Figure 1 (tube, rainbow, N blue to C red):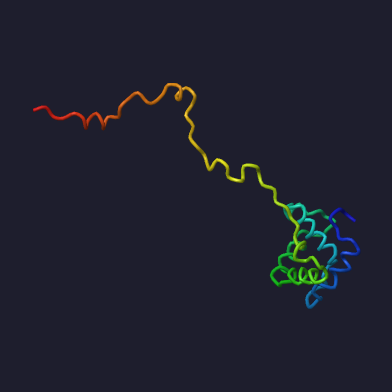
Figure 2: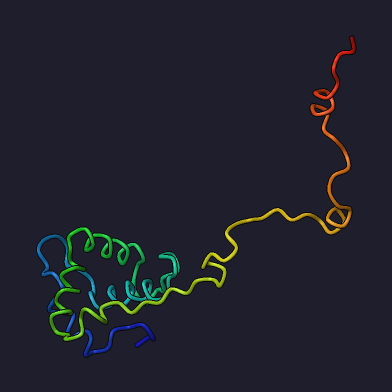
Length: 139
């Protein structure tokens, strides 16, 4: 059993919540496919990096997507939540870490004057439109 695989106790709880085989070819090992789905969800790896021990990545991906469309995942989560008294508190304990500058602080990119320009002081020229406005035609 790999690090992210379901234990026998976990599988015993989840197995009755899975949909029954209805039509089409016999489904492959559901436990192996679920372990593959949980591996991807826990590691955040792309589907193409799924280890071979979980079966073909297209099978694992297709099962994940199709069960999502059919509402199977919601049924599994609802079934698990019924068995837990603290379901509303601990159904998802994921943590997202943000960079220390993600809180805002400065508020955007500010333009800074270089040290040489700041030491030189304000600009020492007058714009042409101002000079032109001061000139009046001589009589």
